[in-house]
Image (cartoon, rainbow, N blue to C red; front, side, top):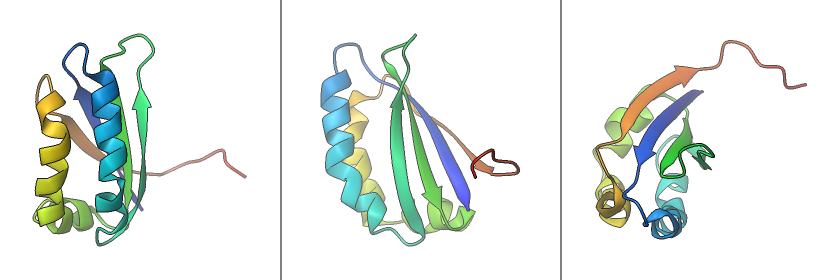
Length: 100
């Protein structure tokens, strides 16, 4: 499984609207090929900074299938207006966990 980590800084004062837009976009991720769900985390120290943690079966499910889809265009249409800068995105794979 691959985890996409997107660091997203939003424009000051748009935090609640951004969170509502991400909630509205939930079905786009859930129906995406290889999409396994996501979490949105908000920074305590920097309240305009978020990290979207999305799980994918494969890297290509995100970089090719989702990014090349109409659902990605819909995602950007819902949330893009709140971005203070383009998101920084990286992908990770789990190598160690402490979960039972």
